[in-house]
Amino acid sequence: MAHNMYTLYWSEGTASFAPQAVLEEAGLPYKLVSIDIEASENRGADYLKVNPTGRVPTLITPKGEVIYESAAIGLYLIDHHGLDALAPLSNDPLRGAFLQSLIYLSNTVQAFYRTFYYPDRFGQSLETEAAFKATAVENLYDAWECVEVYLQKNGPYHLGDRFSFADIYLVMLITWFVPMDDILKRYPAIKMCFDLCAARPAIEKCMSGQTQISVGGAIKP
Ligand SMILES: N[C@@H](CCC(=O)N[C@@H](CS)C(=O)NCC(=O)O)C(=O)O
Image 1 (cartoon, rainbow, N blue to C red):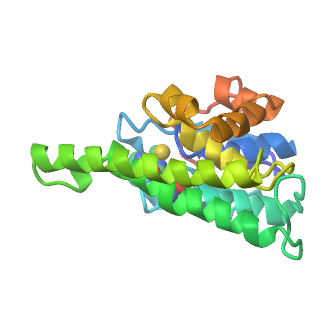
Image 2 (cartoon, protein in one colour):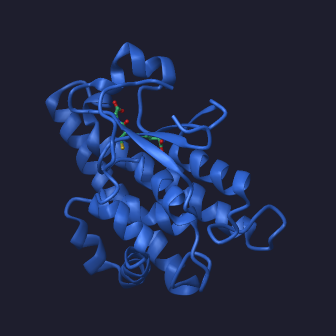
């Protein structure tokens, strides 16, 4: 592995999208290691040694540090490389608004998706699982409604005219909605933010899978 290269444990359509988009936007050298969640590779002993939560993504820095949680990885990269094109840095007056939007997306909106995608981890019977899933959908609509109201007031991006990692996070979470178009049809300000971001070459590249240079299977931090 090249000494200046990041390694991102990645899986298509998952939370690895956000850190990958930061790496792409910043032009940082990285390689992807594909983790097959369908085949439970994320629960295998090798991956658990790297990330004991058994979730994707995980970043290994060129110095060998291990960082997981997609929002944390993005913030780490932004801070470490001073990427002020992707976020207001610590002394910027917009820092608070940026953190608020990012944490709302990662802590509230994203959490409802986990209930939606993994209802078996919440309910103990098929009926309660279905109820958890249905409630997750309602919660997702409510949460996206809050984002819509915020963007109508402050948009087109979370920070007005300034694109940031919070918008990358929005794109990722929108793509997880089933059906995605439903959110885009319902919420015009979210659609505007999504469309502006999706037109960025780095994001388009991550969405279209053009970066799939994955090294499958071999988990070597
Ligand atoms: N909060 C975590 C969530 C990561 C997450 O939920 N990853 C999913 C894929 S999107 C995963 O690894 N699922 C497999 C599992 O939980 O077993 C993050 O943002 O990194």
